[in-house]
Amino acid sequence: MKKKLISDFQKEWNRSALIIKRHCLYLARDRFAADDLFHDTWLRAYSHWEKQPVNKIKLTSTYFTRIAKHAFIDQYRKANDTTILYAEQINPTRNTSTELTYLIEPLMQHLTKKQLVIFLLADVFKWKLNDIAEAMSTTVGSIKAALFRARQNISKNVRQHIDKKCTLTNEDALHVQLVAAALSSENASLLIQLINNTATTVTLYNQNSHMLSPRARVA
Image (cartoon, rainbow, N blue to C red; front, side, top):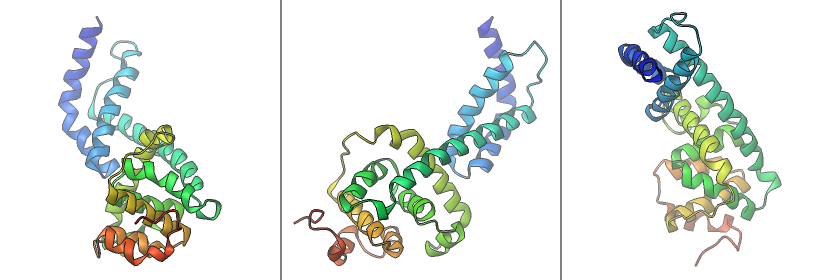
């Protein structure tokens, strides 16, 4: 009986799959986040549908896209709640450089460098998205997509692994030290330099070595 239910559901899902995918991409503004939302929508839609009396719910594209919208809202709220707490932990006025390094390392391991900087500018420095877009010479839509993905990664991968030892390359370790220095000195322009490809990480590290604590410096 359950196999037939899944088969019937999948047939209707397949008919609307392209519309659902487009709607997920419209909501998430990021291909990877849209894929996650697409799969989450399937699970939610099927779980809700199978609990209802037969023929009570018509499996239409409208039904599926409505489920996608609610799934996206839930994801957004959950990610925001988690990242607000994490952003508060990174408050540079309450942490030493070493403590900031400890908090940044898992971000470096699970986020792209662009996502990391955008997250810090938006949720720690409290910059407006249009100001971030202007500073990074990109669109607000691109910033929104990267920030959404960053918050999702923090919610799924960072918070629960905060106590695990991070394995970083030498360059990424230098990058972490620079981010910590930028936070400690509230130097947002240094964060932007780290992803605008104006100089290599090593060059920026040497240029800003005076900002690093003695313990953070490397030979």
